[in-house]
Length: 162
Image (tube, rainbow, N blue to C red):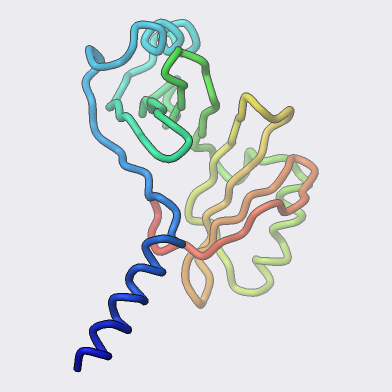
C-alpha cells in the first residue's frame, strides 16, 4: 500500500513539474484597468459598447482584455499592462474571409466539416491578418488558423465554441 502511495505521489509531482502554469483570468471593472490601458482602448475603439473586462495572469505576465461590440461586430482586444495594444479577434462571417482561405477550407468541407464561427485575428507582433475557423466535424470541434494566403498555420481539437 505504501509503495502505491509513493508511486502516486511521484506521478503527481512529475505532472506538477512538467505541466505549464495555467493562465488565471479574473473579471475586472473599468476602474481596475491601468489608465494607459483605458486610454489605448478608448483611442483604438471609439464608440465601442464594452461588454466586459478581464485581467489574465500567466507565466508571461499580466494582460488586460476588453470584450465589446464595435459597429455591430463582436471584438475581443488584448492590451499589455502599460497600455500597448497586443491584438484583437473580430468575429466575421465566413463569406468575408479571403478567397485563398475559403479555397483551403474546401478540403475540410469535403470531409464533413462545417463552420461554426469565424474570426479575423490581428496581432501587433505579426504583419498581416490571420483567420480562425472553428469547424464542427464528425469527430468534434476543430480550431483552424489560416494566413490570408490560405496556408494553415495552426490546428487543434476544441471542446466548445466560445
